[in-house]
Amino acid sequence: MTGRAAVLRRVAVATWLLLAASVAAWPLGAGIGRLAWTLAFVPLLLPLPWMLAGSVRALRAASLALAPLLAVAVTEYLVNAPARTWAGISLALAFTAFAAIVAAIRATPRS
Image (tube, rainbow, N blue to C red; front, side):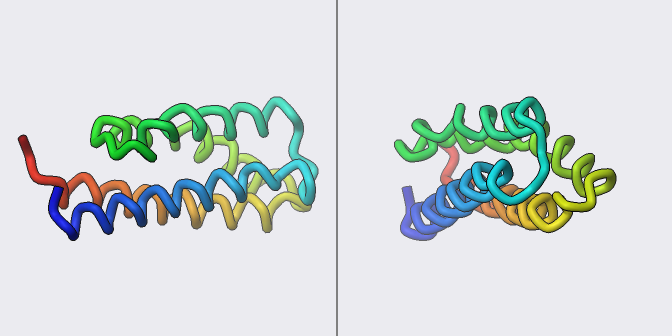
């Protein structure tokens, strides 16, 4: 793995951890139900061990794990006024994480 790819992978993991932390904080500050929170949070945990290990396949899977979060966050942003701040932060971090994942995948040399 090149130096640039390693740095971008670390950035992708860092943004993923920030995203998971922001979603983990939803029950504390916003009126988001447990089911919606679980649907958004649990898929974020699935690729995490392999992302930390440096797997490119985990980065590819992580981009798919964002789908439930995006659906829940957009819904909460549109219909739940008290949750708009938390959902907006999570949406911004989701798009940042997606961009970092795509950059990390593109920088990884093909084997």
